[in-house]
Amino acid sequence: MWRLGFFFHEMAFGLLSVFLPLYIVSSAVHGSLLDIGILSAAALLSAIPASFFWGYICDKTRHYKRYILISFLTSALFLYLFTFTVNVAMLIILYGIMSIFHMAHESPKNVLISELYSRENWKKTFAMYEGFTEIGWLIGLVLGFVMSAYSLTATSELLFCGVLNLIAFVLSIFLVADPILIFERRLVSIEKTIGFASRGISVASRMLDGFSTEVKLKRENLYAFAGGLILFSVATSMLFTPLPIFFSQAPLGLPLSIIFAVYALNSTGGILGYLLVSRSSAQEGEKPPISRVAIFRGFLALLLISALEAPAYNLVLAVTILVLMSFAYSFFMVYTLSLSMELVPAGKAGLFNVLLGIGSASGSFIGPFLAQTTLGFTGVFLITGFVFLLSYVFFKIFA
Image (cartoon, rainbow, N blue to C red):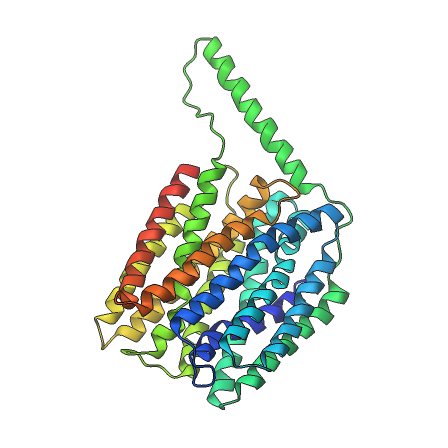
C-alpha cells in the first residue's frame, strides 16, 4: 500500500513527459527543439548534486518518509507556478529547481525497498514497484490523450498534474513509514566480501594440493558498471527527449492526442516487461541480462531509421519499436537497481541516480541539438544506436 502515493506521482509525470516538450514548441511559448534540450539538460544537471545530497542525508538521518513528502509537495507547488508564465527561460529555471526537489524521493524509495525486503526478493519487489508505477504513468498518458482530445488549456493540464502530486503527498503521509531496522544492505555487503574470500581460499587450496581449477576469481568491475550505466542513459535520453517532436512533424505529423496514444502503447510494453521480471526467478549467480538489453536497444534505435523511409508503414513500425524498447528497459531498470543496492555502500544510495543523471543530462541536450541540425532525426537514431552498442561493451566487461 505504501506505493500508492508514487502511483499518483508517476501519473502526473507520465502526462507531463509528452505535454511539456510539445508545450515548449507551441504557439503559446514559441520555444524550439534546442530549448527542449536545454530545459531537460539543465534539470538533469541540477539533479546530479541533489541525488548525492538526498542519498547521503536519508541514510545519515535514517529517515526516508520526510524526503518523499518533500518531493511530492514541492512538485505540486512548482507545477502550480508553471501556470503563471509562458516565458521559456523562466520555465527552464523553474523546471531546473523543481528537479532538485523532485529527486528527494528517488534514493529513499530505493532504500525502502532494499531494507523492507530481503535480498532474495529485491528483483521481484523492484519489478513490482516499477510495474505498478508504470501503470500510473500509462494512466497519465491516457488522461493526456483525453484532455487533448477535448482541447483543454495548458493551464488546466499543469494544474491537474499539480493536484495529482498533492494527492501523492497526502497518501504518503498515511501510508509510508520508515523501516524499524536498517541492516539488509550492510548484510549483503558482508556476505559478498565473505563469499569472495571463501572462493579465494578454495582456489588457493586446490592449487596447493596440485589440482587444476577453472574457477575465475573476479570481483565485479564497478567502474565498468558505472560507464555502461551512463552510456545507456545517454542513449536513452538522446532518443526519447526529442521523440514527441519527431511524431508531431513530417513525415508522421500526428496530433497531440494521438501522440499521447502512441506513448500509452509504449508504456504497456514496460508494464508487460515488469510483470514478466516479477514472475521470473533468476538463480543466484546468474548473469543479469543488462548487456543483452543494451545491444537489443541499439538494434531497435537503428531500425527506427527505416521508419523515415517507409511512409506506408512508418507509424506502425515506430510504435512497435517503442513498445519493444520499453519492454527491454523494464529488465534493465530492475536488474541495475538491484545491482546498485548490492554494489553501492550505505550513505551513497544516490550514486545510482547520479550516474543516470549524468547520462540523461548529456543525452537530453545532444538529442534535440542533433535533431535541429542538418543531421536531423536520422543522425539521432544512428548515434543513439552506436552509444547503446558502446554501453553493451562496458556491461560485458562488468559481467
